[in-house]
Each structure stands twice: as structure tokens, then as C-alpha cells.
Amino acid sequence: MGLPRVLKDMMLFNEGFAYLGECASVTLPTLTRKMEEWRGAGMSAPVKIDMGMEGLELEAAFGGPMRDILRQFGVTTVAGVYLRFAGSYQQDDTGGVDSVEVIVRGRHEEIEMGEQKPGEVGEFKVKSALAYYKLVWNGRTEIEIDPLNGIEIIGGIDRTAERRAAIGIF
Image 1 (cartoon, helix red, strand yellow):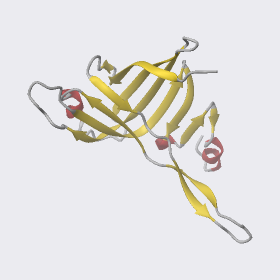
Image 2 (cartoon, one colour):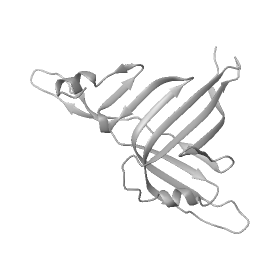
Image 3 (cartoon, helix red, strand yellow):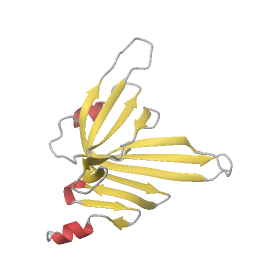
Image 4 (spheres, helix red, strand yellow):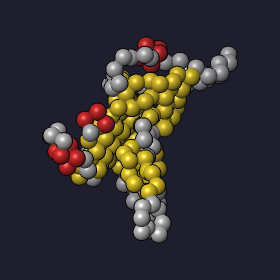
């Protein structure tokens, strides 16, 4: 028997600055492969061919306007903003705690100021388009995706190394 890992606490960092008490939620990137159906001669059914990955994005919500995020809007480089999510996940059956970090680089695609009402916590949401992604679990890198350098490392295996070598990129 086992119980699920429950997020007991978290922090979001922007360029190393901690959003202590300000970040309400983080929607971590969805990892999606772009697949296309192919049915060739002699095949009784189509199979899906891996055509690479879909774009990555991270979303975060805050309790009110965030000046530093507003000042990053329109940054001119594709990997111009460094964000790091740190989550503390605990299993209530064992008491064990796992540290899960998601480190990304990208730029803010959308900033939503949301509804503002006197005497209430405001809304402020940001969606960031990503050019780099790394997931670290208890200090071990599990996934690293670097589209600009053609790198996809999953569970310690560089799945694109042979392709890079075949075209002379090491």
C-alpha cells in the first residue's frame, strides 16, 4: 500500500528572488510529444511517428501585481528569464519527503492583470514560453530538455546524442 506524494510546500524563484507569500500557484510544463499517424503499404493499422516535442510553457498566479515580472515583459532573448519551482512532496504513509525542482528559462508570453477589487486579494497571472526545462528529483536530474542545443536527456539517457553526432554536433 502506498499513499500519493502531496505537495506540502513550494516556492517559485525568479532570477533567484523568492516569491515568499506572493505566489499562489504554479502550473508546471506539460511534456508533450508531437505525434503524426503513418500507415504505409502492408500495414494493417497506422502507428504514430514521433516528430519531436510540442512547445513548453509554465504558468504562475500571484496575489497581486508583480513589478519585476512586468519589467521582464518583452525581454528580447528566447531564454531571457530564469525561473525555478521548488516543491516539497510528502507521503503520509511513510513520512518521506521528496524534493522536486523544475528549472526553466524562457520569456513571458502573456501577463493577465485580472480583476481587481478593493479589500480583496488581486489576480495576476503570467504565462511563460520556455526554451529550457530541467526536472530534478531529490538532487538527481531526471529530465533535461534544451531545444536550442538539441538535447533531450531522460533518466540519464541522452536520447538525441546519436542524431546530433550524425550531423556533426557534439
